[in-house]
Structure formats: C-alpha cells, structure tokens
Amino acid sequence: MTISFEGQAVVITGAGGGLGRAYALDIAQRGGMVVVNDLGGSTTGLGDEASASFADRVVDEIREKGGKAVANYDSVASPEGGQAINQAALDNFGRIDAVVANAGNMRHGEFEDLSFEDLNALLSVHVGGSWNVAQAAWPHMKRQGYGRMVFTTSSGGTLGNAHLAAYGAAKGGIMGLMHGLAEAGEPHGIVCNALMPNAMSRMTSNIQPGELGENPWAAKLGQYFDPRYTAGLVSFLASKDCTTHHGIYSALGGRIGRAFIGICHGIADDQPLDAEAIAANWTAINNDAAGYGIPANNTDEFRIVAELRGVKI
Ligand SMILES: NC(=O)c1ccc[n+]([C@@H]2O[C@H](COP(=O)([O-])OP(=O)(O)OC[C@H]3O[C@@H](n4cnc5c(N)ncnc54)[C@H](O)[C@@H]3O)[C@@H](O)[C@H]2O)c1
Image (cartoon, rainbow, N blue to C red; front, side, top):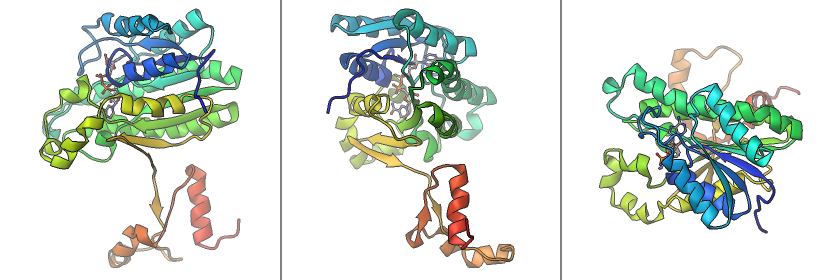
C-alpha cells in the first residue's frame, strides 16, 4: 500500500523547522501540495521578531526535489491568520484536504515563576492556533465532504512535567478540541486525530536538561529523536487512508502507539457514596486491573456505566 497525497492540498502550520518541516517534506514527496506556514519567531514568543526565511527555506527544499509548496508567514494565533493560511491553499491549489496544526511555542519554568502572560502566550498559539486554522478550513472540508485534521498535543505537556504546567494546560486544551471536532466532523467526512511527538528540535534543545537527561535509558533513545521518526505517523493521519478518528498517538523513541483515556470500572452503589466509603474503596476505585472502559465519546461513558449498573438501554 502506498500513502499518496496526489491532487491534495495540505496546510501545515509551524512547518519552517523541526517536526513541521519533516512533515512537509514527507507529504510533498508523496505528491501533496503543501502550504508551509511559519511565522519564524523565537521559541517563546508570539512571533514579534518574525522572519520569512523559516518557511521559505522549506519551500525551496521541497521545490528543489520537484515538489509543490508555497510559503505563508501568518500567525496562527489570530482568526485572521487562520483564514489567511487556509486562503493560501485555496489561492494556490484550489482546495484544502488536510490541516496539520503543528505550530507551537514554549514557556517553561517553576510554577511560581510562570506568569499569566506566559500561560496566555501558550494558550493563544497552541489552543487558539489550532482552533483558528481548523475553523477556517472547516467550511471548505464540510462542503467537499472530506477532510483530515491532525492536532499536536504532547506527552511532556499532558502526562505531567513539573516545569511544563502552562504548556500542559495548552496541550491538554488541544486534546479536548480534537475530541470535540472528531465528533462534529464525523457526519461530514472530516477525520480528526492528534499526536504526541517527541523529537530533537529548536524547541526541545532550549528546554533545560531535567530528569530525562540524567537517565541513561532516556539518553539511549536519543538516536530515535530525529523528526523523521514522527513524520510517517503524520502522513498517515493526514491521508485518506486514515479513517479512524478520536485517536491520540504517541511517537517516542521510534515507537508509535495509541494513547487513550480509560476510566476504571470502580465502584457503584444505589446510595450516594460518602467520603468514608470512598476512602474504604480507594484501591478498588483506582484498580485498572479489575477493568476499565475507554469511552469512544462523551455519551459512550453513559453507555458503559449503564451496562455496568445493569440499566436496560
Ligand atoms: N519536539 C518535541 O519533542 C515535541 C514534543 C511534544 C510536542 N511538540 C509539539 O510539536 C510541535 C512542533 O514543535 P517542534 O519541536 O518542531 O518545535 P519548533 O520550534 O522547531 O517548531 C515550531 C514552529 O512553530 C512556529 N510558530 C510558533 N508560533 C507560531 C505562530 N504563532 N504562527 C505560526 N508559526 C508559529 C515556530 O516558528 C517554529 O518554526 C509544537 O506544537 C510542539 O509543542 C514537540
């Protein structure tokens, strides 16, 4: 089987370097017409010091290899930016088949040192940026009854890292956005998924070496941290061959695997469980070995609990 983007236009945000560049090269090499968006700012900022050279370099690289690409320098952080990025696909390629929301910035540090401004800077690029590019592409995808959306969350952000509370809040927001759009997109052929990449890039090289750097097993995985170890996953998720939605996929150390939100079967009673009952049953409440459900969506959790409780549905 060959994954092809022949005749398709793909918008990739933050594609002027790191992971986004690897995605753009892979999709272009598979025949996709790519909008290489990048504001070209610092890793921390909203891009006040923007530079077109980021996106231009990747477009040149793609064209040198015979691929089709155009550069776009708008910020994902405003609705107008989201519109302009998608308009670049319509103006140059006449269509939008997939959006890879990859652009990101980083603020990290001790919780008490991170400011509300840091939080908002991350929310506006990660959550706002994903929202803006997705929303601008949505009506076009709905009209054509087809679309693929790939969102970028993060294991560092969402599984817990003491220095990444603000980044985690933003990356967690993206998971919620993806799950909502997966539901909203299904009737229209718009398939939404997310990934948690791990790669050496400008962003990760700026993070202070923490506990990871001190672990020899983590260092050993370093050889698999080239962005190309993640690019194949994104190409698949952005392609017409990916027909499953709601997924979160981790790419780490050369391993690709699905991540999911599971809810332990826990305990139930016909009377309200008071704090003492919770304390007495804490082990059972936390016991995933005794069984858990993976709700496909919001209402599916109701179905799971109804089944567990023997409620006829
Ligand atoms: N590298 C990792 O290990 C890792 C881990 C988890 C998640 N991620 C996520 O992957 C994505 C790519 O990160 P990367 O590691 O390649 O970092 P990177 O800094 O190399 O790439 C991010 C790109 O986004 C661009 N960008 C930033 N703000 C923008 C804006 N407002 N509008 C348009 N472009 C903007 C930057 O100029 C940059 O080129 C990010 O969302 C990041 O949070 C990366």
